[in-house]
Image (cartoon, rainbow, N blue to C red; front, side, top):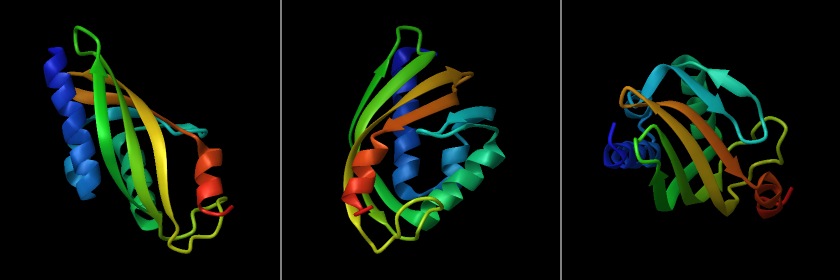
Length: 136
């Protein structure tokens, strides 16, 4: 997959995220997608990713802005740097109480691409900064 096609794939990934389009989002992933959760575990498969997205959509309203995508020459790997603009809607397990707090968070993600789809996602952001912003 050429690197420009990978850039476009990652842009479509974040566009689906911003639209909260779970089905469109999942359509960009391999069936055995690996998701490395920031400061958390590793989940494998679309159904686990669907459950993660549903939980995220319940607890957070987020939009990705200032997206910058980088790829390797053959398009098999990508990285993205961006800013998350969010509202904390419903208390997420183990985190401070939600009261509609707004936050702005620099973040990044690393991707592995296989057969034109995302096969691995590793997200990273500063959880301590997020907790500070929401008053935890």
